Length: 366
Image (cartoon, rainbow, N blue to C red; front, side, top):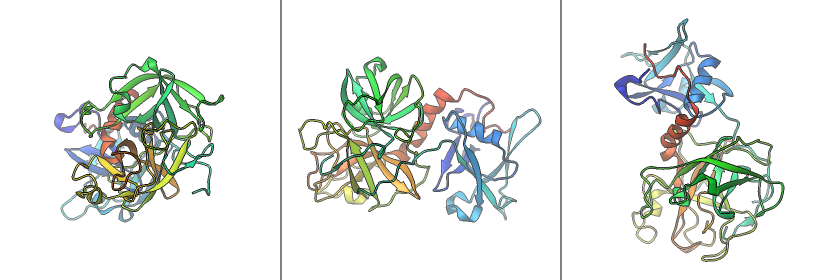
């Protein structure tokens, strides 16, 4: 059954704001879902549409506790006896409250947790086992080429420039639970499918994002865990301290590292990064900069595709994927990362296309 306005069925569900508020697209608008008549069956359906294979739980939060822009355009969802989904506007001219005063938040995956470390790449420290359990090493023809991040048991997120022209899945192996190249005991997994953004071009800098689908699902065990994707509209402000990690070179034009290295760096605003002496306007809305303008700590060759991970309320989120930069750790040349919040709809659509072959969906208005 088609979405309203005849748009494609994909991309009709999203999670928004810091609380993971559920929104559905109806009548060309994104509408926040009220808690009325919500049930776990609907939760399973919504998670499938977000590209997940399972559902964890739903919570209801006060309408007034979420971001103001999410408090408008409300909708309630109900099922009739034949399990056909109905969407009903709760918006009126004078009142935009859900009758319960609460909205639905959704959790489809246990993610973003790791063993706690007190320890505080170029200028970085050697990482401990389990410190970055979402970090993977992508090997092409048996050699480490790029990093990546586990986002579900079947999906790895990396950079398009890592796989462009090298998109034969049989040539790639994903190593997880690894801190040292290549130590016995780490899981090694074959790749079923590689998808890079259709608008990526090797001579351009935008849309530098790709997904790898594993032939077999990962087993999470504390040393191998997924990192959470951010939600739509979630903001990560300048100065937020985040972590980069990878097996890349420890100096410009150097050899890749045997050990997984990591460093803490601050996020930079697009305005700061687009200054004439920095990247002179080359930073688009699909990119995010992180690092120190004075240089000294940075990602480098071999770190590409790996995570820029930020902690928010004790949950680790994938804010960026290592993309490009001029040199390594040079003054006024911080690292540039693919901004994951700008790529969420693309990520969700690829995962949904592959995972969510179920019906009905949360997009009908029959």
